[in-house]
Length: 149
Ligand code: ADP
Image 1: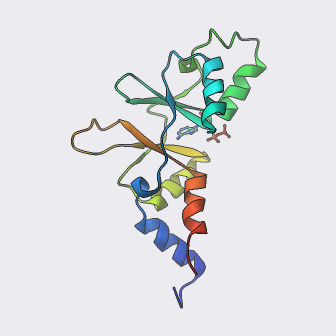
Image 2: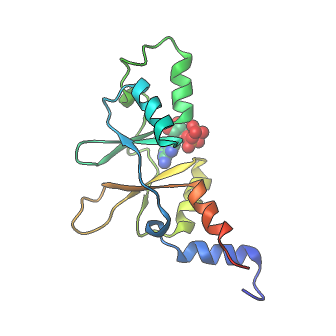
Image 3: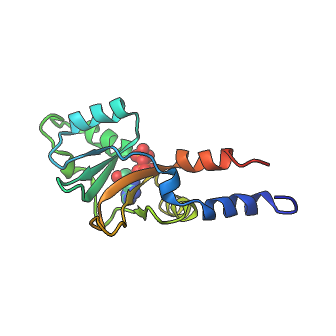
């Protein structure tokens, strides 16, 4: 990397890495899951964002920590309330494809001020909107931390 600025180096590395090389496993529930059970899943799986899918694994929405905090402020029965009521619903969900660059994922996370993106598959034998992974700020930081200079 001699002669290059550090920001160029980071940009190049992020541009070369594909989302499917760095993505993690998605943690998903369905729309009927209660808010209570979803919060338990959040703790058990140690993630900040849950994805919501149908029984074909097609992405329907996302729920994050703030969505849960908001709903617990009200006088609601969390065991009766389905997650579908509070999730951010597609097509308002920001996503990436598994063949996109890590740089595109970083730009979307920055532009839309979110922590995490669902990764959708693009293999020919899969439906276009199928959820195949997740990419968080942590995955992007890991690439930067591994740059060898
Ligand atoms: P947190 O609530 O943990 O701070 P975020 O900042 O990611 O997490 O979420 C803020 C809001 O954005 C929430 O209402 C959440 O539903 C929504 N959100 C989270 N991820 C996405 C996404 N990929 N696309 C669209 N909206 C999202």
